[in-house]
Image 1 (cartoon, rainbow, N blue to C red):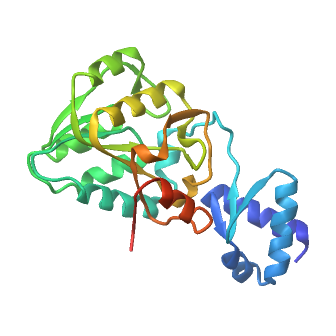
Image 2 (tube, rainbow, N blue to C red):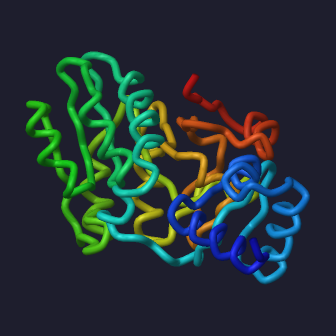
Length: 249
C-alpha cells in the first residue's frame, strides 16, 4: 500500500473516531510499527494530526463546536460507560446540576437514586428527566441553537438561586496548563458558576478530550474530579497530580 493511501485511511479514521491507537493501525493496515510511526510523523509535520503516546489524535479548531446531533453520535459506547459511573455517584435526596451535553444526557437513564432534585441548562435533557419522574428545574436564558444549552446573564441569575450537592459538567478539552476548556466563553461561565455552587463537581470526558485546548477556560483541573473511560498513559501521571480520576475498570 502506498504512503498516500495509508495517510488517507488514517485521516478518515481520525475524522470518525478522533483518536486512534498505533497498534490498531499496524494491525488494520498490515504494516510495520516503524512505517506507521513515520506516517504519523509526516501527517503531524503537515499539521493534519497530533501525535500522542501510543497513537494519534485529530486536530480541532479552538472555537469550533459541533451540534448536539453530531456530538451524540460520537464515541457512544465510551459515553455510556462514563455516564453510568457518573450516575452511580448520586445519592438519595441530593440536589444536583446536570450540564448540557451529550455525555451528561446519557447519564440520566442510569440514575437510580431516589428523591433527587435536578437543575439543568440542557433543553434536550428535560424530556429524559421528566420521563424518570425526577423533580426538574430548567434554567432560562438564551438558548444556543447548536447545543441547546441555555447561557447568558439570565441563565447565570437563575443558576445563582440554587446550591448543589454535586455538579456534572461536560468539557471539550482537558490540558495540564489550561485546565478544562470549552469553545464558548458564555457557556464556560455557566459551567464555572455551576462548579462554584456545588459541594462536589465532576467532569465527564472520554479519552479524546485529553490534551485538547478549546477557546475558553472553565476552571483549573483541581476544581473537579474527572470521570472517564480511559486516562491516556501520556498524561496519566500529570493529571493524577492535579485531581482525582474515576476511570472505568
